[in-house]
Picture (tube, rainbow, N blue to C red):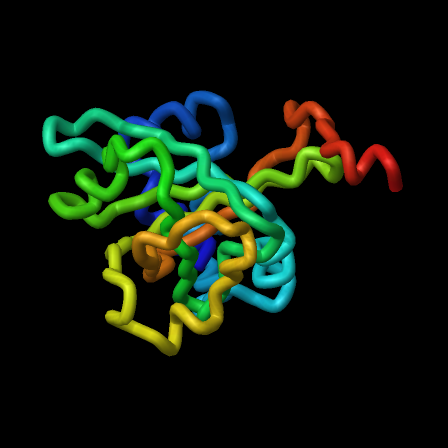
Length: 180
């Protein structure tokens, strides 16, 4: 799926810039590798389900990117299978920008950060919003102990993913991590 990420995200303009920077051959190998076509591995699953937040980008009908922070208890983002993620869509500020965007364009990009270990997993996919009761099998697998009202479920069919360079990730720690 890393090759799918590269094939999807590396536009001709990006390829030209990679060529100028001397990194194009490295990324071309990634595109042609057929690396991890079976989906997310156990390593990615553990990383995903250890997060208590992530950033999700959607696209407005006019083509503007919109990024939203999503948070919940550790493990609220679940790996349903190697190609599918899901999370409970908790009641929030009631702007419904992401939900509105998904109704017209199902493309999403997720950034999952592990600041203490300076790790970042990028995931692209196609998302759909389910109403409560629409898929009880997936709903039953989601963590709901936050006390927030669940408005539905977001299911993401993973198109590709890539791990990113850790060089410029500033370590940050939660209160709980500092106690440890």
